Amino acid sequence: MTDCRLNFENLEGWVQVDGQDTKLYGVVSDNSKKEVSCWIASAADKSFSVAVQKLDSAYDCGCYVYLDGSRASNILLPKEFMNIPQICREVYISDTTARPYKFFPVALTDDDRFLEGSASTRDVGEIKLAIYRLSRPVPKVHGAPQAFYCPPEERRVHERSKKAIAHQVHYGEEVTRQQPPISLARPIERLVTFIFKYRNLEMLQANDIAPRDPLPPRIHSDASSLETTNGKRKISEVKVESETEKEGDYSEDEDIARLRAEVERLQEAKRAKREAQRPKKKLKQEVQLFSVPGEVIDLT
Image (cartoon, rainbow, N blue to C red):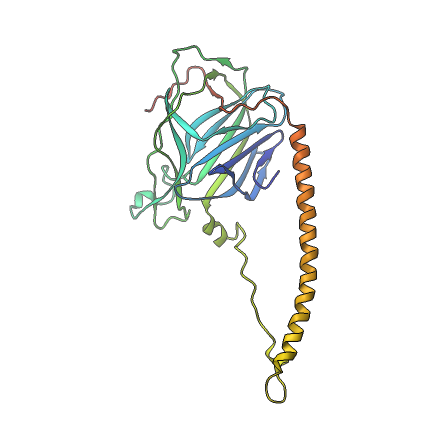
């Protein structure tokens, strides 16, 4: 498991914000429930995407994407796709229209109907990727009913809520996009559910989930060491000691710089080796989707 991807057996899942993999905090695995959860940092008005990947080609898989408890998409992971990430960054609301995933600020309210236990806010703050083994997918017949997903309504959180949520998932402005071909398949067995609990970074740091930003080094001197018969040491003596310490620090800094350069060289060599081992098959730029036969969710 990297510090940006959840992993369970031969499956990986992660979240990207503005195209960059998000760092994971507080990863917890529950093998009995087939769940892996973590915390990630969210940012208001930032677009995000979800990604899944199979590390072997034993069978076909499908991933149900849930955003704040609402189903947003079904990602297909064909049997022949190995080490090929499938990235989904938008929800299709018609054959030719999509809306990107985005984080939005949560609206606070003093309405007691939105206190703890409210079904409308129970899952706010969570991105879930439920991955299933599928029956062999077959292309959807042209003109057959299609499942589309409407954006969730704006959620409100009570100002005294213990969940301390600052963001929610909503969808950005509509864009013209041709929906990819749909395959039909049935879920056979749930393999794992990846759960990403998102909060703003400051909240994660305040609860000691994410490390706090390092404090700037403090510059101090031992006042007692500067005292002489007249209360102060000569400036020339202090200056000589400072220069000596500076030379020693400089030598240590050089050693650190050399070690860092060596680490970067080894990491680059490792990345090059990994890239060389990747399959030469051209990666598909377009995510593949699937639908369950008979499932019609037309909420537009």
